Amino acid sequence: MDDDDMLRVAWNDFERLNKVGKPFLFSLLTIGTHTPSGFIPRSCEGLEYNENAVPMLRAVHCSDLLVSKFIEQIRSSSYAANTIIVLQNDHPLFYKNAIDGGFGDGLKDERDLFVILDDDLDGEFEIKKRGTSFDTFTTVLGYLGILDEMNFGRNLLSRESLPFDADDEFFVNASRILPKLSYDEAVRAQQESNK
Image (spheres, helix red, strand yellow):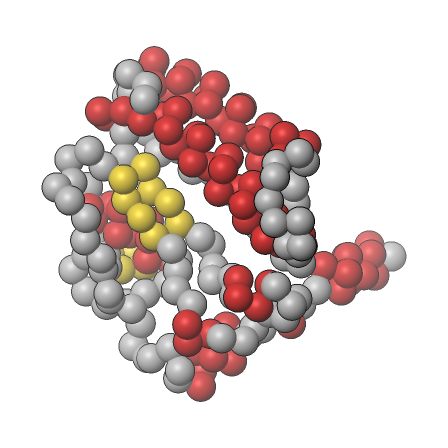
């Protein structure tokens, strides 16, 4: 499902869950910026952007627009006061290398995105503790005062999670496994396993 369609369905579900009147967690995953070239839904086909931009950068521009509109829809609704919005990526994507099609380099310059939007926050602050996307849900639960540690995650508001630096050999090698896999390879492997 393209991101624009998914966000339309998500808004209806968000409204329905709010009307029930009980606390809930609502998690969405967009696909627009997934490699190798991103996915541009029909609603963004006419979106003006740098005509020389590679498809991935066009997809990033589209996703940024769609997600920001969805967030504004929530924040301008009657549900805004009781809603905390968390934005995160599921893994770093080396956007500076998306321009020339290379992925996997520039690891030391990339960070996970993790943002909490809450009207109760006074100003903004940056967490500079080391962690992974495994830590984000635990950090949200810690922010809500529920728990600070799970099997796969730590609350980054209270402590670091990773016992090694970003340039540690183990971290570098583990982080480069995914970029070396291609969609075509995955499809071929799936077809072979179905035989």
